[in-house]
Image 1 (cartoon, rainbow over the protein chains, first blue to last red):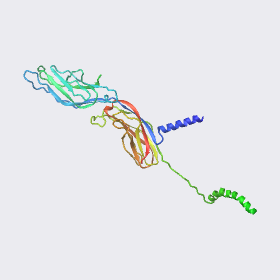
Image 2 (spheres, rainbow over the protein chains, first blue to last red):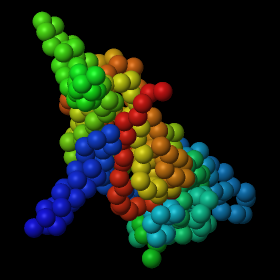
Image 3 (spheres, chains in turn purple, brown):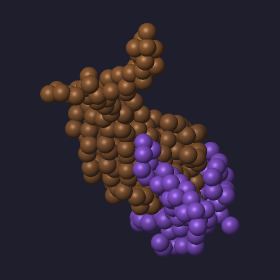
Length: 166
Length: 176
């Protein structure tokens, strides 16, 4: 009986001491970091204007590199298993005949640019193997047309999407 | 001669009786004195109300990449502490385990009257190594309840994703 009593006294002393009384107190904290994957652009590029050509050749392409993009992901860090990302691009409507809209995205430090890609309504990879963040990365557009395109004007909405690179 | 012998025999008994009753003789009468010793020992008791809620990071700071942590830190102020001390004291905070690299746990203790809180203090370094820190100082004894404990959890994008837990130890120590 005495032993049982002693046992309970010791147990209660231990619990009392360990949890909260005395000059020491303990708190358990739990934390989580959810996946974060975001991409955004600095704005719209100016109008791409084709206005001259060398005689006998197709008009010279118009180029713009004035806009940039930022990509942020926390799935390539040193805690979680690496989950590479990719960026795809598409336009909302096909380009007029005899014209091409080409885009080239500068890759972040840990990523691979696919180079010049002609945009269409179907998504295409622009940057792959992204394992890090990057900001101020250049977006270069090229607008090409052959003489057969004639004269025209229009606009397209380009959508960049950050996805798992599987 | 016979009387001397009797006196010699009675002397030890007499001395014994004097020895036994002397204290009573000294301390009795119309006054009495006692020496009372007293002492107050150092008391430092801290109690916390429980564990804080989960700290969750789920979104990028809108001002990224010019933000302090990349992501928006999460805070919890749902717990409190009670404290009683009879001496100038400080409270230190300490994690029992290291944190993942790229994450930071901060703690802020509301200050008792005459106390001085150091605000949010970080409990680990940039590599996640635990870092004991002073959280509050006060030069006056106090007995105060319901003082808010605030935790802040911050992470950069390189911390990756995941979850975990840790334990914070709050210790009351002599200020000096």
